[in-house]
Length: 377
Image 1 (cartoon, helix red, strand yellow):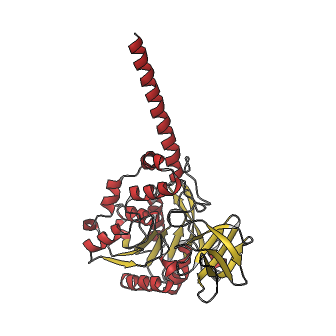
Image 2: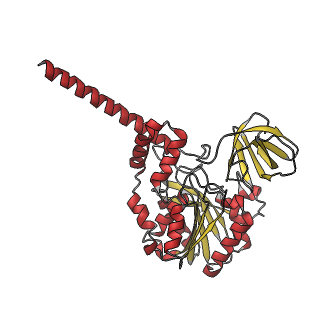
Image 3: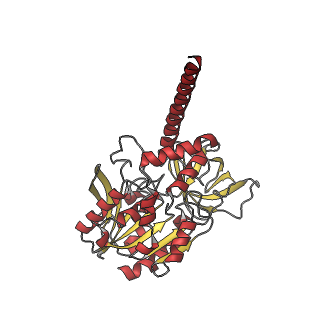
C-alpha cells in the first residue's frame, strides 16, 4: 500500500510539473507572438542617445547603428528620422554620429533609450511624404475579421501593387515606396492587417507570422481587381512576404497575380521563432515557447514549403534579402533563386539587417524594382 501511495504521489507531482511547464511554455510562446511595432526584432538592439546636435545624433556604436542609409529612430514618446553615419565628425571609439534629419515626435535628448527601425515615416503619408490633395485616397477593405483601413494610390496603369507589411511594423513601413510607385504611374493599395492600429484585433492578441494574415492579402487583391487591376504584383516584407506567398497560392486570386516582390521573406517559421526566443527568453524556456507558439499560431511548415516550392512558381519573383538577416535566414532565398533562375531574381544588400534593404540602399532598391516591374506593366 505504501508503494502504491508513493507511486501515486510521484505521478501526481510529475503531472503537476508537466502541466506547469506547459502553462509556462504557452505563456512564453504567446510572448513571442506579441511582436507589435513597439517591440524590437532580432538585429534591432536597444541604443542610448549620447548627444544631440543641431543636425546630428550620437548613439552607441553597434553593427546596427553603423549601417548605411536612412531609418526611423524610436523610443518612449519619441520619433525621429536619421540619415547615414557622419564620417568627418570626431567622436569616441564606442560611439557613432548619424545625421539627424528631423524629429517628428517628442524630445530627443541624451540618456534616452532608442532603437533604429526600417519604418521611417509615421502617420498620414500625405503629410509625411508631401502628397498633393487627391493623390492618395483612404480606403476600407471588407476583411475576414472586420474593416481594414488602407491607402490607395491611383495610377494610369492596369497593373496594381498590393503591399503586405511584416512583423513589428504597420502599413507605414511600405508607405515609404509610395513616391516611387507614383513616379512609375503604378496604382498601389497599402492595407492594414488584422491586429494593426485601426483594424480588428484577434481575440487573443497574437500575430500569426503570415499564417492567418495571408487572408487579408487575398482581400486586398480582390479589392485591387474591383478597382480595375488586370494584374497584381504583391510586395511583402518579412512575414508579410510569407503572407504574400501564401496568398498567391490561393485559387481565388492566383489568376490575378502577375509577380511577387519578397523582401526579407520568412521562409522558415521555426527559425524565426527560435530567433525571437533567443532574444527574449532564457535558454531553458526556448524549446517550450517555440513549440507553444507554433501550435498557437497554427504554423504549418509543410504548407509554407509548398507555397515556396520552386517547382510551383509560375510568376516572376524579385527576392531582396540581406545575408546578415538575424530573423529570416537568407539561405532559403538563395536556394529558391538557385532552383528557379528563369523566374527568380535575387538581390542582396550586405549589412542591411531584416526588412531594411530600402533603407540601406534606396537608389539600388528602387532601380531593382524598376527593372523587375517594367516588363510586367
